[in-house]
Image (cartoon, rainbow, N blue to C red; front, top):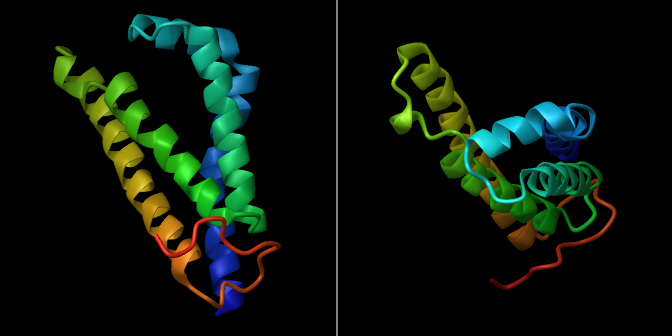
Length: 138
């Protein structure tokens, strides 16, 4: 079972690592998009978002305070869904559909990360992790 949990963690974080990579390699384009969505200090937000995605993903992958890493991902995903993917404001049907997909993806991933947070914080036999949970007894 430990190996299955590890494989699940690896598969789960692939998206976060590729997104973090994009935050650092396509910073200008992502900054322009964040600016178009009205984010204050969009460049700082893009770079900080990349750091949170990378740190949270690495924490979950390696099992170093994986509960904290999962919580970081939730903290990143929920505001991103509501601030960056406001499908209800789109007038073009294609743009609205694309933003709705991203909104729903972010919420679904936040839900999965929240479940991982609970799993890592409350399960005694985590298996294949470097450290135990940071949060216990919540």
